[in-house]
Image (cartoon, rainbow, N blue to C red; front, side, top):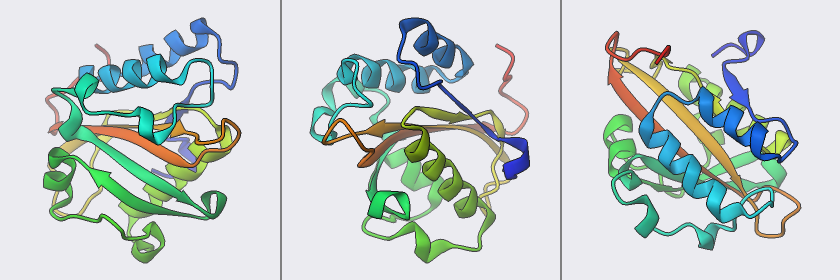
Amino acid sequence: MESENRPWRTRPSDASMEKTADFRQTLTSEKLKIVFDTWESLRVGRIGPRRDDISPAPLRGVLASTFIIDVVDGGRDFRFRFAGDRIIQFMGRRFAGMLLSELVGAPFFDSMRAMYAACVAAKAPLASGVRQASYPGKEFLEIEAMVLPLSEDGVGVTHLFGALESWQLGTHSATR
């Protein structure tokens, strides 16, 4: 995910329903759409809901594909908080409690850092398009990821809520 390619899409800062619908239309994964719809219903016109607003019940069926990240020092770093079973399976291990800065130098984590920082700066949802995974050992998969801002104070982004779905390479069409 090179920065000159802008490998993610963002919702404009205008919080109108039309712009929200436009962002939703860019998602190809039904799981990501469910996560986005849940987030949208909880944010009630704010940057995003509070972390405590996110509960497992409305995410039944997609919780395993979700994650929560703490924003550290205004977005200078990020701490892995929660990852569902599908995320852990994709990553091959748990990262809970680790800082993203501990994983610099790997293209997958560098791209993750850039996407998270962009979400914090924009205070808006971001999604990567369907693309081949760059995570070591997972190059046979294609993935779509999304990050959504959470805000404890309604002003800044304090956490990120996201989802990831993967498919066998070449089996998912981004033009659905």
